[in-house]
Length: 295
Ligand SMILES: C[S@@+](CC[C@H](N)C(=O)[O-])C[C@H]1O[C@@H](n2cnc3c(N)ncnc32)[C@H](O)[C@@H]1O
Image (cartoon, rainbow, N blue to C red; front, side, top):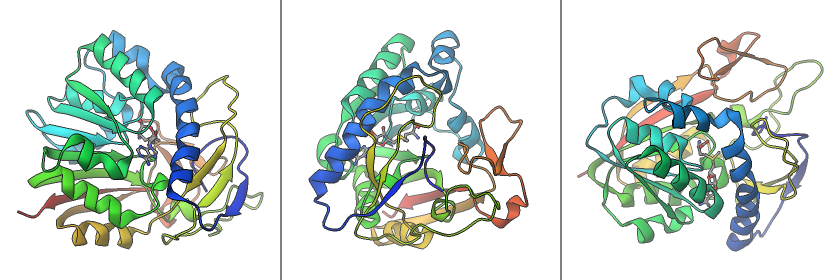
């Protein structure tokens, strides 16, 4: 399995990928996706404009575990076009969104301006974020749903999370489960076959595929991406070693995209959640992990 798109073509594992190469390669991919996503009905921009109470489906799923964030200062790492960020602002938080894609941030700023959201958007590569948005500045970090897979080093990610949080500040992440991300693309025999890395590896998986995970007519040209998986234990350990205390870990039997086309059924929850049709209890689909920065 991998993130949704067109034809999945794994080019293999690239060794000695320079850090600037992966940033440039992935940025070109996201810069091209952002306007197509903003124009796609799947990101529900029209609903945000028409209904001041509209929340993204991701944030609506998160609400029971997220709880009350009103009056809190939050940062959304890898915020993309800002629909989740603006949803968190609509729940009463004062939000900063961070992403390395200028076109994604332009779209996010446009939507925030048109909806009057308490949200600002800052351009930064993830690992530079503490220097750009400030250290110990935020009550909570929100991230996930297609965020961690773009980062080569989960320990450095944990350090970024801890660095931007005030002491006592909180991390909330829901993300595709690393076990789901190991699975081979759909097969005729419908077996679930572990084919891709579970543990973090130095070299990325390099993909070359057209399309994206929303409905769009755009024909993409920047199709190469460099991606990494990180095991659940590696993610937890990264946070512990960065000075965080784990306060919650829930594994879910659904994921907010059709991760394994042909194997999954869309739930009737209006949240775009998908679950294995056959014995979904075999597989964790996504997880919510929460942690607090130790004082
Ligand atoms: C799938 S989106 C996740 C956001 C959110 N779940 C959503 O769908 O709106 C991934 C985002 O990560 C950003 N990104 C990828 N690599 C990054 C990096 N190294 N530094 C900062 N942002 C990065 C991309 O620009 C993209 O906007």
